[in-house]
View (tube, each protein chain N blue to C red):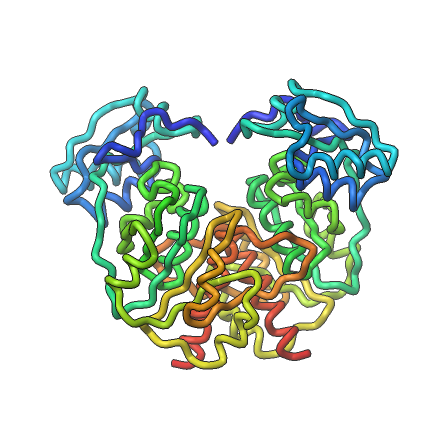
Length: 246
Length: 246
């Protein structure tokens, strides 16, 4: 992965690299957008003008910042980046939620955020230690969907549980006895949480005793599915049933 | 993405970087494995000894090659890489297949290979122009599942069709009128092909007239789902139905 030396996790702000992610930041979280950085060659590019006029409308300062853009983005061409204040939302306990337990890869986290938003799950918890939710790579992989979700990072799963109260939990585990389709035969309650573990380790064994552990049926020719793929399949399976049962 | 200057697409060989992908190469395609490259600090690492003894068994030469490993892998630690001859399989027309139409990203292609193998689809076609199937980044993202699949790159979709004959085609398109779950109400035939388009452009409009175009229901808060995620959901949906109907 490219080095993003312009960003540090201890800062209270981060960057949304790219025209589309910047647009999402300005649209969904204008109150948290500090500045809009533009590349000197950005003028006239598709989307740039719209971005600039949006910034003007919202009173957000724009500035040319070729060097910062090069530093925060490993991509050769990064024409824009919104600078935003990090945030911590309150999750909605009445809605379906996703918990990512100690995910290690910012690309995976971003991709899962984008998938969750697309498939209608808008409350996402991360359990530490985990990839940095605000790393520009996460924001880029999320295509800016980070700004449209409610997101919160917890120190432990217990902290999440204590705050969110009684819910139906669905830990996704390779060795769970119930395949996903079977777990779906009973319509899942609205107050439900899909839980996905770390890329390498999965979920700790004690999650086998929580709620209804499920597995995605896959053959033994692969070690496991990619985390973001597993989350996509899980999110789709739950969406599907809800629609079918509606 | 890291630069992989040690590899060039015009070569007739490539590299499987990493202990697990190398192992898959030696296990599934020993006749195509030319050498096993090892890092000088690989000795004693988990998996390395098994890899070395497997190479010995199969008569595959091992050599220390720290510099080549550093060049072909952007990862800081790459302890092993199998050097293999590129191959072109004959797809099995009686089996379910996946066509990737002009995919641009080697990481996506690799992830889809891994997902397809895990979900039981073992015949994969790529349509040019497309990401290099044998790029070490593809191999790495596939976790070596490339070596266990039948794969073939075609110059055009027409060439694929001419070779594979009559099949039920399922082009995945954002604007297809039939949602995936509805298309699944009729059990799909075994001779079926799921078709996924390019990351940015999707499939060309003429695919709307081929077979049964389907869409993954997702809301308009995201532009589209990530290609590998869409393929994962499609593969799962078709797997699911087949099992349910079995």
